Length: 205
Image (cartoon, rainbow, N blue to C red):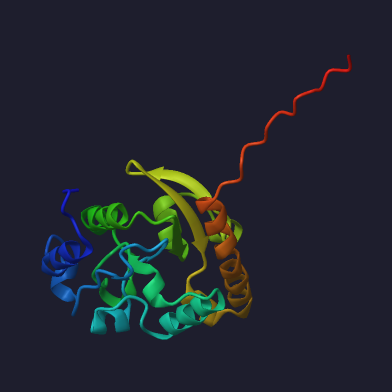
């Protein structure tokens, strides 16, 4: 990453990118949006239909739910940064291909280096497995994990995707419960507990 890198510069490069066919088939690039100094960065899989139409991440029904979930912990979209692994929509919402991820993930890395979030929240199984391979979201959701990805130390919280919650009431309840854990996780990440001191034994003589 160059010293003068910025989210605006990255976004401009994403909009001009034609390294893979997705840049030619998508209507709009979806670089991401939000606070460049956000403590929380949300990462999904790829843009969907409405994101592709508007160039805004999570702007459909799943986005409306995400806004409600953020409000439940006194946050707004302006407080966070939200993006996807892929910056252009795959046709028919298919899963991202390995070659597409390889070409697109350097943009995500640069965004992480600019923002330096305290917590990265992955939305959905695919985004979780990008950072945490071989885990099952049914077991790992809501549990923070410290990793090093591409040389960057990250605190990852895997969550269910809001779209999955809209289809399944049980997933919805779990997603709501996991969201309520976020403030405490951030607090602990920002202010780690003090080290315990060994008490000094007083002399009996």
